[in-house]
Image (tube, rainbow, N blue to C red; front, side, top):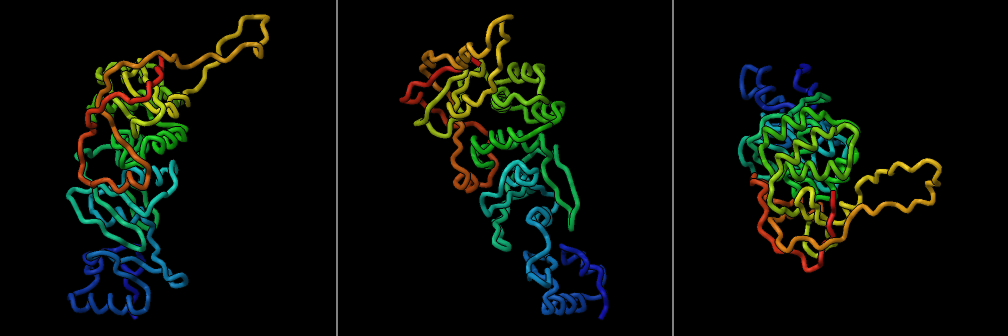
Length: 315
């Protein structure tokens, strides 16, 4: 029996396999025989995957399959967080950005959904059994802040970015400029001001402050939660996020016992402004990843101030 080259690949398309044959009938015959022997499996359209003969499972990862499903596409949002090791797989969804809208495809227990984006920057390619195209770390951070509902919600994105030990500040600024969204400058600046990672400079934060929208915005997942208003960013945020701000230990005067110093109160409790701006709603992870694939600008609907009087964050 001839040893076909396509049988040595974890993933291959019908067109790739056809290069080894002089006729379609010969191609289809070889594919049928390999399938009957349990060596390959057709997983979608003209896409085939090699099969592990011991476990009868497909060899390619969900990242490799997602990349192969949409030629020219790439993995993004929560799937990209998972790829970069910043989040655990929480659903059976795999998010792929493509050039056109496609119906969801279910393969081996996972649903592959296609999203649209006009952004073509910040994409990296790696190779294992097959190529993987995915947003790089910096683009992933900004994509998830831009569309919180596709990344599991604010808490999930905050937790993921908190795990980042290094990101290229220059890339973040470059991508923010390409995004050119004032609300994204605000969300990025605020979240990074709370996390306070060592790779972000004060110059970066100054740029975010200058480019951020001046209106009052809201990133609470719902209005009925404990709330902090940040004067610095003109932003309503969940108190659970605001109170994670890294506490900076004040310099103690010489000769005094640090243990006798009471910790500084990080947040003043003045009344927040009566008006509230648009709200960027982001729910829990399972509901969030059910969001419509169609791309939409992150311009939340207008909301009124919460019935619960929010505290005010001077930072």
